[in-house]
Length: 465
Image 1 (cartoon, one colour):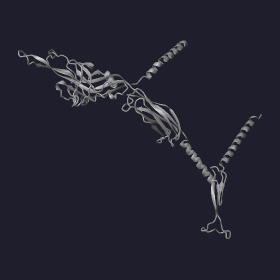
Image 2: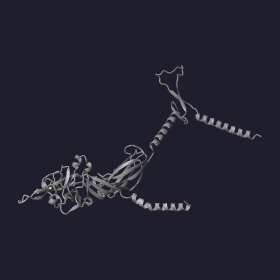
Image 3: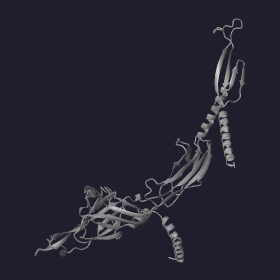
């Protein structure tokens, strides 16, 4: 490859990088996506032909009907049959949609049921939104609780179904059947409708005698695993699931200041503000990330009261205590939404740098040591006598001292004064110096002089003819 070709190729690569940079920035700053799998808090099925039956503890969620071929006794002149329908059966499910963080942007929501027994034929299923609250252990076709009836028996109102799907006899155990319920979840989270749950019922149709073949019974219902049935069969993966994809809402803390400088005993104030798309309760938390020491309470923080609503602001006062180790402290302030972790909410944190000024503990100890040393040296260099106190010059730390005590004797006899008779005592401090540093300097000077003489001698020897 020629030099011109290399130049052209390099220019093209640089241009490509420049062009792709904005797309990379956009991709890296795109909102975070999340997904959540919700299990039902309640699930049961009800049937019209047994209007007082409570099926909350059954292993299946049945949807559909039964068709029976029975003899028509109203015909006397010949043998005739007729079709008798038993059912229909409807299933009711309730999920806790409050586990989805408020403010989340819902992208997709789908209810998945797993087949326990497939139908004998093709069946259309309709999903409705419940408009009244029910009690799982008390629900029947007529009653939603032990004391309250459904406004419409069966819990649904025509024609307000949300989604329709079909099941066939080609299904096998463990196969999944999905219901797209994105609109339902969005309406609940926006507050448009209450979260009472959903009901799934069959779309009734006509059944003729020719549909039975050689059988006298046609099972036009499908059994899905209930949460109890999946647990009993030790197949928890077959429990009903509400799968939701969404964009995480954000909760971010910002500070009016990002750095403070304090001396011991000083205090300062700043403001923390919350912002973002999260629409639930938010609290302000903090923790110390870095500190020059591990002492308890070097800094004291006081956060003013605030309403914990989205967009709140709170005043913060920081005090450097009198014993705070000097140095740099880093405090992290972060939002907390009770019940929602970082897997479903994007949290924005803010760091505050606090610099505490003052002498360090090491410097204080060194100053104390120097003061103590000087005090001891001055004590050793004092000559003490009766009635006088004369200070001698300052002695280096290598000075050696000894004390000689002379006892006064009687002028007449020259004998020692008895110990019981007080006598003036004179204490004399004799100072003996050992000037090690002077000896060292002298030896060094002699060595340097000898070395200089050796160099001069060598130069003179070389210059001889």
